[in-house]
Each structure stands twice: as C-alpha cells, then as structure tokens.
Image 1 (spheres, rainbow, N blue to C red):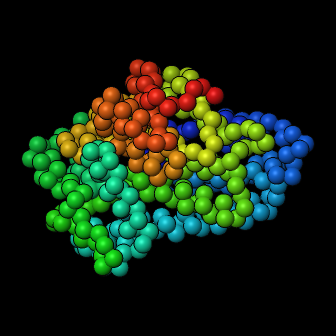
Image 2 (cartoon, rainbow, N blue to C red; image 1 turned 30 degrees about the vertical axis):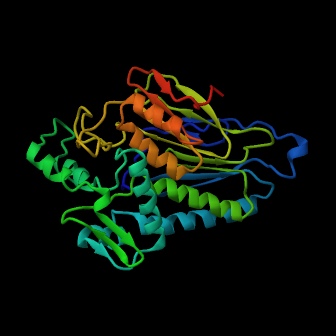
Image 3 (tube, rainbow, N blue to C red; image 1 turned 90 degrees about the horizontal axis):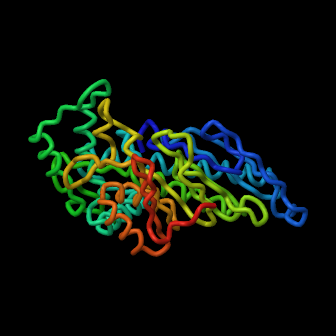
Length: 342
C-alpha cells in the first residue's frame, strides 16, 4: 500500500450515498415509512490510512450503533495495514524484503500471500506480487518532468527477480528464493482490508454498508429499503461524463489505471507492470466486479496487463466476476456478465 493513493485520480462517485466525491454531493432518497425500523439516513466516517481516504457509510436504525461499528472497523483496518504494508521497514513485510526471510509470519500476511500466489497462477502470471524489483527500478529512474531512461541490462536484472514460485511460505516462516527479490501486496492488500472491515461491520449488526477505500469499493445490503448502492465509473481522460453508473448489492468493484502513479511526464511508464516484460500497458482503466474486494482488487491489476480479449475471456471464466475495459478513446469493452446501466 503506497504512501500516496493508488486510486486518488480515479475518484469514484457514489451516486445517492451522500458522499462528497468527484466534487459533488448526492441527494438521499426518502426512506419509506415501513423501512424506518431498519433504515435511517446513512451515517458516514472518513479517515486517512492506506495512503488514501477511506470512507464507511452505514444505513441502520441506530446512529450510535453505526458509529461504534465504524470505529471497530477502522481499528481493524489499521491493524491489518500495519501487518501488510511494505513501506514500514519494521513491519513484517518490510523485514522480509530487507532480510530475505521472516520467521514469525503473522497468519494475516501468510493468508494474503497465499491468495496472491493463487491469483498469480489464475492470471497466468499477469498478477505477480514479486514485481517489487521492477517497481524499485522505475522509482529509482523516475523523471516526472521528462522521459524515463531505462537500460535494458537493468530491466533484465530486475525481471530475473520476478518469480512467485521462488517464494517459500509456510508455518515455519517465509523466504525469498533469490537475493534482491521483494514482495509488494499493494495490488491485493487494500481489497483484503476492505473485506475485513466489512466483516467487522456485519458482526456488529450493520448489514447495510458501503466502504470506499480510494476506489476499492465494497457494498453490502442496501442504501435504503429497496434501493441499491450506486457507483459511477469516472473517465480518467476527464471528457465530462461518466462511462457508466452501476448498482451494487453484496458486491465489490475495483479499478486500476495507468494514470494512478506515473514515472515520466508522458505517463508511458506507470505502476501497472507486465511481470513478464517490465513494461506498462496502454489503457484507460480496468474495472472488475467480484464477490470480494480482494479478488476485485487483484484482478483489476492483473487483467490490466493482459490483451483485451484475454482479459474479457478470463473474467467470463470466473464465477461471479465481470470486467470493463475503458479505452483511452472512451470506448468501454465489457465481459458477458458486466451489468447494464443502472
């Protein structure tokens, strides 16, 4: 999880949720009288962590219950962030990356790594948490005011360190198989944390809620009686319209795009990297709908580097999954299960 937001430029608009996003506030629909016992005007808390603004919106009959539950959810989110971040040298992942091994592995870290390993193979290597050497190389050559100069020899050296199967992970610890390897869970940890925060809210009796972690979004239940949570996909090219508005019910959505973190003035090199070449794909954005935010988060990253046809086909092959590829010319290509306009 980077210190600056992976998703800030995306800025989803939560239509009808009462959130101040994309420069506009939505109007809440009135709640029918029969729903008053279960729903009230949604309440919200927002906090800065995971390098972005994280908002929780809860719709229930008791604002006190909602606020208490949100406090617990944020506490759980911060606890997990401290375990999964690569940006703190003293954190477990920071120790693993600096020393090449970690004896006392928190179960949360092992769980997320195992999920990352599985999605790597699911995507044919398009999502790979061992790309950190490539990320470090681009960060070291970053030139925001001009072109990024990258020697082929340096690129080959970094690529040789990208290998998910060279990481050992078990109850007795984790080890990186080659000197110089490193793990980044930036493309999956935020989604996992959102799922965990949602689980806290559910246990606290707040079944109707929406969490937005800088564009990683999970919706549970309804906003009000019979009214779904709605989100709008923003055009990264800022052409003055939203490509699509979607309704979410017990579903997550995440979006990745090359505009989020760039390493040169033209945006040719950005944080989305093909693990097999070290190059960045050319696209507007990739949005993925899935049952969990962790899956949506990781697949949005992985599908971004695949050819469009392969990305859509993979999404079609996965139960409960759909994807929408927004091209730079504004055209939206979608998989078969992508929903119609809300």
